[in-house]
Image (cartoon, rainbow, N blue to C red):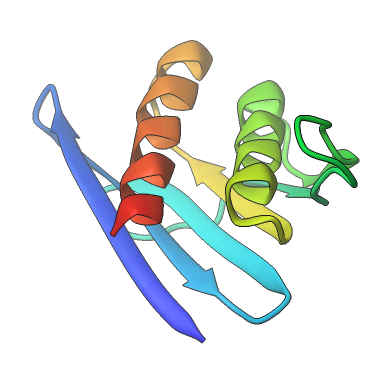
Length: 109
């Protein structure tokens, strides 16, 4: 297991991604401030390059689209099943941009 972290400050708030990389899966926490559980989404990688796998929101009522998109992005980046938690006060579109950027940072580290 490998634990990775990336952060970025926007408008005085610290946004972070903590990512636990296992042999067969990714567990990512996307949050601002202290770590909190948020809307939870799961995704599997596509069977071929460029194809999105299946995804679903498991828990939560806010940021449904962003959480699902981040789970799909994580599954595509790491080519593993991904479980993503998103807890933030950003707008949904901005949250998707910020946390996608942080997933890219984690990938390159």
